[in-house]
Length: 279
Image (cartoon, rainbow, N blue to C red):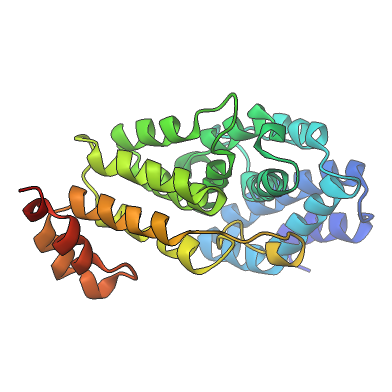
């Protein structure tokens, strides 16, 4: 067995399913093995270990955190040991995935008010630079907290986009639309009307998935449709409102030029809701 994965393989072998105390040892072993792999084999070796072990480690932590309902206190303790945005550990790829799952589960099963604010602040604090792109992609689950009584999800997404972090706002837009299509379209309208935001059609493309499926593709290694009863419901009126926002906010020539690349009828949006109809 290669030396870099010895601590991780041993921790997995010794761990007992649903045993929270074993999670601490497993996270420490993961962190040690990834650090050693990077030192000795670089990025390619890291990818090999992720491909071989990451799903198993995530599943173990997820099972331990949810065996008797979501144990938010346990997750918070894990995150206190491996906080976001510090760049001195490799556990965010595991913990962000599990927290994101639990945010979505809680929204659907208990309601948005039951999502702890600290979990949302955790997701919002993860960065590509310090935590890695793989972990960062799952932070879009922040969008499932739209309507939260303490965290203004739509305002936060708009502020981040206006300060230059449009990529993060795109993920939030997609997930918020899964959670609450009307709120997601509200956010799209605010984004398209902001003078500080450059992108337009890329934001529109973020709504493709919620119009075609019931759950997002991130967090990975999870099949939410096997455990959660949920369907995205988008009325014809809401669909029409989306076309109106697109037609009123984006240059009609751009809409017609890119019409074939989008699932929405951009040409009709331009013709029926564009500036020519203001007269």
